[in-house]
Length: 250
Image 1 (cartoon, rainbow, N blue to C red):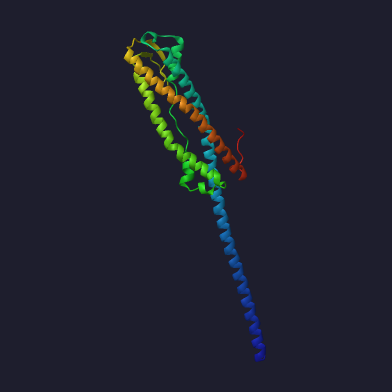
Image 2: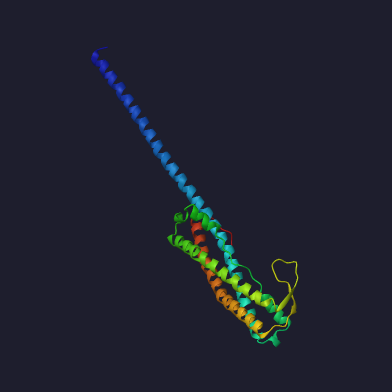
């Protein structure tokens, strides 16, 4: 074989090697890029699933709170009505005596429960920085605004409620005796109405009036909060449905 033929053959071999190496390099490059895309897609899907999970918890929290706040609104309205009846019925010590209606209204006045708010879903979303992953920017703002603004308010209302309630119970103590009961959640029945002085009745009527005024004010407020939560809950449902998450029928 001549030198020229050998050179041509070597050139063909070199070109084939370069072409093969370049092709392999392109394949490796594409594989790496596809790997990055796959990792990115996998991460996005993971975050999306985490966001949907916390939205489902928030949805369940809102459902429970809506029911609770509607019940609290009704309970406060009933307490305010009962308190007004007691306040208007017992205007002097001679009128402070047992009657079926008065006993019923006093026991109604003493019913109720502290306020609580289910925040597990929201706190989880905030801790994992998933609120920013919500597609609807208005829902992001409403969730943060609702939970952050109402948290301190609920604490304040609870403290005021407990203080007003305890003051009323203290003023009722010399005026009533309760029949002991096995229940841990109510006062039982009224055993006896005691004779009380004008000063004692004045304090009692004042504490009842303060409590019923507070109860009347917050009965309306709890209905307002319940309606606000319904709007947020509906927005959460829209977000979940857009992401292919089915919800049970209300």
